[in-house]
Image 1 (cartoon, rainbow, N blue to C red):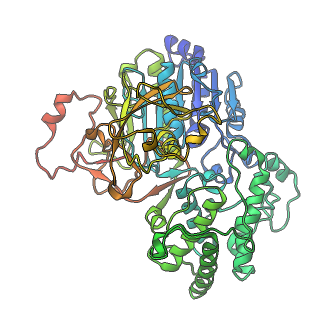
Image 2: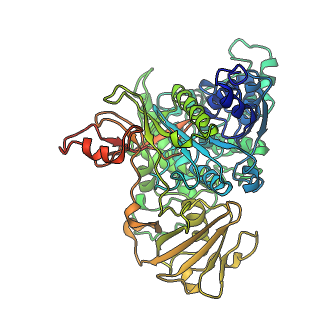
Length: 615
């Protein structure tokens, strides 16, 4: 390959052949990246990914074929990449990078880590592990036509968490269909279901596994190829669209309910590998729904309270009947367009998303909340992934050659900037002294009501979700070392339902947090407040001057872009609520000194060349 052929020059070739790489993620970016690495000449590569291959991956994750559906992404990516360079040594793990098996000692084995992830929690974790192991991390992400690559090195550059991130907006399609873990996953699934039944049909918006589709089992892809071709089938697999089947039932509410929420869920349960490290879903039957009491007073408006399962099922039935009539009025080739302001359409999504949330043990939401979450959906772009994967390797070569000071933050824009460039390099920023992850003394302020915040909510929503910890231990810095939370299973569970105030935690109290898996210690300063704005449970403020997300991608104001987090929000879907444009910020170009920026910036408030879209 390139290194062995001498294309890269002797020093670079030697470094490429001798280094050991960890690639986290084998999806959209990961496939392109792995191909690039073996063709460049990298010989010792470890790739890890928890996901299995879905049919919807095949249009852009080119290392996968139809016969691979249902198999491990990491394992198949390894086998396919070896076809490009049989001499490479690739080790594949079908596992989560957040598993305790991959601690600091594991990360210390590598020369460099390259991220190709699709969720923020895993990105935060890898960031912390690389900081603890003191090895370089190349972070990347794509969102539609937008992309970014940056290099992270302890003490030299900003870490991934130095700047606050906007809320996550993208989610892998396999998560939507098989393993939802957040309310938004169920909202997206419900919108897909609406389109499958009444809207524009899109094969990438399949809502459930076909109970007769063998592709969803590990060896099924190969089995399908061995089956005889039938007159009305593709690849030996007889298919019937969700809409065709629903129309044949006369849009019977009971049959559709039991298909989606009982039979399909039972089929998912048969895929045992999905549930080894996840909470398995519980199927529902239309005639045997759980009886749940509404916790809100009867005076609360319908849209402002969480519906019971029986109420959700009734709304589902009523909406099917109403939408069936509207659909029929559209004529033979007509279709309905989902609109959050259409009462029937909104009720349909609210009821179905809450039913699915209940099945997967996810907190249910009010119709009002679901309406606010519903946004537009745009697909991932294969060419964006390819460009970003190439940039990752280019930056990696600089790191290997000891020229990390020459590395850049590189942004891929939707359209050329005024200099006619799609790729814009910017200088790497220094670590933030106020970062609650990589600063010498990490600390953060959390605003909450100590009389209403339980220990369990502190652990799940603040420490694990908001602050990205995996196995936290928490004690009060009160001179007594009072333990609130233990990472040892079963210990301190009696504290779960108690409020912070019961442990005399109040305004100004300090909690000492330690995550042994991430080798991460954090001091949390509690700021008590009786009532937070917008009825929030808590607010992680850190330093008040750093509350707003940092602008990243240069883009003219008249262009349409997407919003995302690091996370990469790479892979199947991105949810876009609105484009946020900030005119007051700028990123320093690679060839600019800091003083040059102010000197060159026009003072006119109408200057649009410095507009930035948050990525």
